[in-house]
Image 1: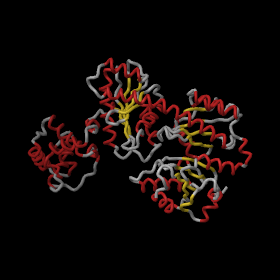
Image 2 (image 1 turned 120 degrees about the vertical axis):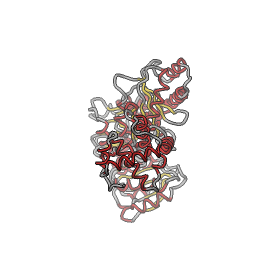
Image 3 (image 1 turned 90 degrees about the vertical axis):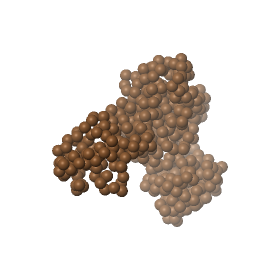
Image 4 (image 1 turned 60 degrees about the vertical axis):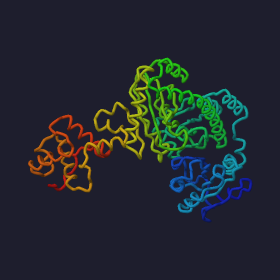
Length: 519
């Protein structure tokens, strides 16, 4: 089936927005539906890409369209079919991006379901015989009954493939967590699962559900292509979508209970008995120990940080967890502590963040809380660690465990930027005057002097100065700052002020190359 065959199907009503004539004769290899901002790893060469454009917003729309279409170009997509339901029409930003990258683009009318396009492609590719290769009616009825009974994805996958000989199937999240698998399927490590979804060697069918975040979206994966008819796989994926939407509805009530717990934890005077009751409402034990983890994405998309944190906690195998939002909107989780520490979340953080690579995902982990009375303090630690993660890596994803803040330089990263700036300016004063060359020389001397434990000789050697010059500069520094560099506490004040100046000031001056001496 070629691209132009699809466009000529009057029942679909597709409207061509941009293409070059030779591209319309390209063979279609399959169909994938996605609303990821960077879909490259889920698109295979020659595929029709269906998108509802949920990822596009007017703010920054040109850049978002550029990233999305560039990814399709890299993946070798045959054509992009963009739904008009979300925005009323296909944005000009997307049309222009497709023209720049030479990716054919057509609009899908709001009343046309993506399933209709998928069926059209697969019916054409595998012929009318494929209509017979759908789920048997008794299996379809049984699966629908299981969904109505709130059965889990493992039960649904087992039942769906029970009548297919030797079929091996998995349900993965984009971060590589195995949600379900057929009986006897070998275990797949998260990083391997991410690679399997990306390399296109097997069959991947997206489980489309608007009820979950991009971090939690499921993908039905079969290692052996051709063993199961495509229509059957899409029917199973649709049933799994209903399963996930049902779970999301139940979780909405759990989030509300978690939000109430978060409000209590932010109130230092909350009664312990009240906190215990809130913990029980969330399905958590009334006694510890616990871990508190917080996360933020800096994005205005509702639920994004909560979805990422839910996936990270599940990935780490933390068991029962309560995930919600604090009064200021920060996502948080309270999880029962086990023999292991919370390092699992940190271990899987890069995989979770990779689901939305354009969105920085920052996290903070507090130390273990022995009981409900300690949760407020653990939350404060986690939020401080979050501030440290945000400060040290503002444009990339990272997670910081509060137990790693063991030095003055790491400890200071959790202090708000405006407080650090004010402290540095107050303590260092005229030494920060960038217009004054002598001030820069004094600042350099101070950094080197403190880095070499107050050694006059070593400071002079590193800066290529006479030791008398170092003595003179130290006297000037003491004059301007009002500190006595022979006193330990004053040295600590000045060291802290240097570290607060900029995040890069945490580097060790001893590791820097020397410049020409300023006398």
